[in-house]
Length: 449
Image (cartoon, rainbow, N blue to C red; front, side):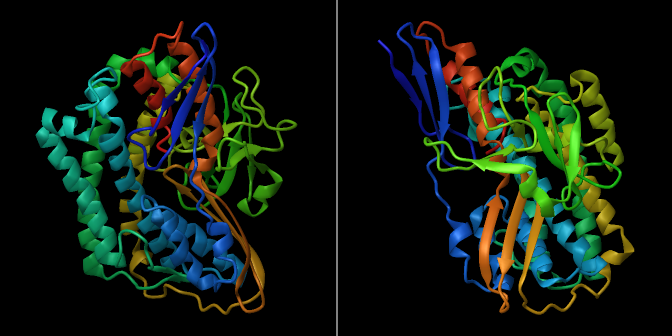
């Protein structure tokens, strides 16, 4: 008899979701879907708010990556009011966002993902978690907590708040960086870079090798990718052109102000979440595993695929090694974890570069701004993907319309495809166990939704 297998909740992700697997009469997978039933509503309830207040409001969208919403929103309001931050104000924004990236990637790899590899995907779920990792390697666990704490405290000590930030303001940043602050943060970022390089080597030598077959098969789908690159085609987390790459590696670049000409937003009846797609590739939207239409992916693997190179030396060396093994574009879903660690190296290196820039302590940090009618789009790369905030304001500078594409939403369609692929590969004749269900969860967990 046909049945539905429910995985609820999906564990070790930064949010709430479930998976429904429909079996046919033979016990094989007929369909599998990921369900997200959380309606945030920010696009509507910021209407009527003063635009300069919105960057502080939208940081509440996500307690994991509030800095990215804060910065994308500030950039959108800058556009609405027609102001450009001075170099120091822009660089302080980018520095805070980059440090937030460095902290976030440690969170996902060690606290959420690593248990599947270090403890094992078939291990008892009672130990297949961060506590199990801490017991298996208490010295490493202590170091991870220490490094995350130091990164968080940099944000809190300098910018006032690590979560739900208020330091970014229309036209720039709210305070300059003092020389003693610069030296202190620089020392911390060198520590974080050393740990990022250790983590990269640790993962390549001990974490990933036993699971290369799984990495090459579980949740693998054939899609395009999206990310941000600078004028030289290098990965950039704060600013640049949006690049959408087709599955064959060809790509199109565009200014985020024109994103609506390139990206459509689709909704399926089983999920509240929007599912963005590339409207300029194909007619329509399809999650069919054999013939998807308009489907691309965001987040770490996507950014590495679309970028021609990394802008920092150690991250570039890691990218070259990665491409020697997996090519470009790499399609294996579990490679998101590997890509995440390469970005961790980049984030630490780039934060050091910004801190060594003489302009970072310039006291000219803000361009005066006056409320006015306008339209503006701001984007940054959030840990989970390309983040877009699109606002319109009236003559009093009040928000009249808002649209947001949050990083995770780019991957809602692809996650459904990866879940479908994993379930079809693993479940036959109704035979299911805890290890199989966890592997299906792993196909979601890789995207860090």
